[in-house]
Each structure stands twice: as C-alpha cells, then as structure tokens.
Amino acid sequence: MIDLPAGWLEQIQNVDWSRVGKAVEDYGPALDVLRHTWTRESLRDISQGKLFVPDDVINDAIAQRIGEGSNDSKVKSVKLTSHANGRLDIAAETGSGKVQKIELSGDIEEFVHKGDESYMVYRVRSRNLPGHGLMSWMFSRVSLSMAERMVGHLETPENLPVTIGHHNRVRVDYSQVLAASDFGKTTYQGHRLLDMIEIEGAKPKEGGIEFDTKLHVPDDVKKALIALLRN
Image (cartoon, rainbow, N blue to C red; front, side, top):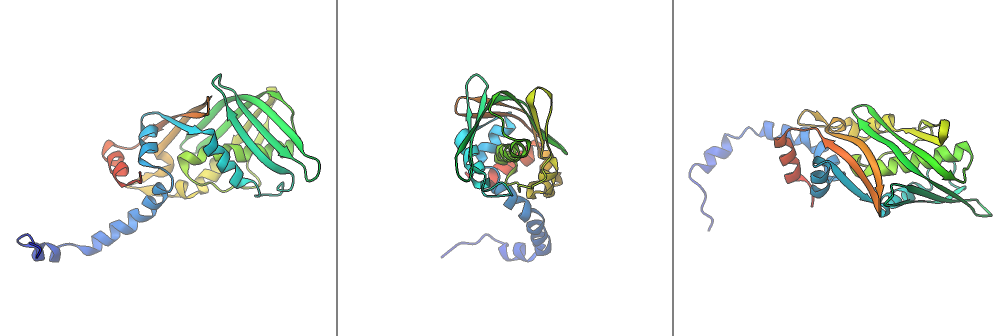
C-alpha cells in the first residue's frame, strides 16, 4: 500500500491544469530542438567558452550533404583535416569518370555567429583550385557542417552567398539559413535560441576544431537547460 500525503486530493484539485498544459505547449518545441542540438556536456563547454568538435564529426556531417544539390555527380567526397599549427586542409574528389583530386590548405580567419550575423572566412594558402561554382558548392557545405554541432541541422540551399575575394579569401554567409532553421525560429523562456549562443572564432587543432563561444542566458535558465538535456 502507498501512503499518500495529507491533503493530496485537495492539492491535485487545486492545480490549474490549463496552465500546466500551456507551459508544455510553449516549451515543448524548444526542448525538442535543444535536445536534438546539445548534450549536457556540449552545453557546459559552450557556456565555458570552448567547444572542441572532432574532424570526424564534421566530416560525417559533410558526407551526409554529399548528394544534395546540382553538383552531386561531380563531387564524390569532401574531407577536412585539422592540424596543430592552425591549418585546415580540405580534400575533395570529383569527376563522373576520371577522378580529380582537389587539395586546399589554409586558415579560418573568421567564424562568427552573433545575433543575425553568421559567416565564415577561410583564406586559402596553398591550393589546387576548382572552378568558382564548385568552390561555392564545397564551402557552403563545409561551413554549414561546421556550424551544426552548435546550432543543429541546417538545410543546404543552392544559393548560399559565397564570395571569393582578394588573397584567395572565401567568405560564406549562412545567416539566412540559420534564421530559417528550427534553431533560428524557436524561443525558450523568452529567449531566442538564435541569441542564446555567440561564436567568436574557430581554430583548427590536432584532430578537430575548437570554437570560441559565449552563452547568453541567465544562470537559472542555463541550469534548467542542463537538467533537461540528454547526456
């Protein structure tokens, strides 16, 4: 037999179930997005200012994007390799018949997300450059795959703004893609998920990329999130 506390029936009868239902309705979508984006560990790392993402995780995300878009038959693989000296190598294989290898090596000069501004700048130091269209295709997928660990799944549009400027700087603007994502359109306790996190930079290290981050939520909200997220 279970002993119930005195007055339990009155307590249940006095609960405003409409408010309980409304809270679940309000927070349910946000929690679903957050649970599919962050773990407790990654949230702690983000809040402490450093999130390390292994190359394998990014390369898996890139591989899932291969097959999307009009260049499917040309691109067979794209792989990132990070180095301790801060270099990020990008290797790709293309060609429907004869395989062509593309090899780039360079630096991530900027990797930024702040409010409605989200972009990456990669400077190519040594290269076997493909055509402009294929460069845009590759870098759109590279940048979105790098961001996914922090902001969740991002769709891959065909018209992502990619510009190739002086000194072989490639700039990818993924702000509109992020704004249109579940992460960009969802709020939790009055905070836009889009505004909760800030990315100030990214530095390749041996085996992965370390992102400089900030978490913009009150401590009580952060504690609530950590308690709710999966391990």
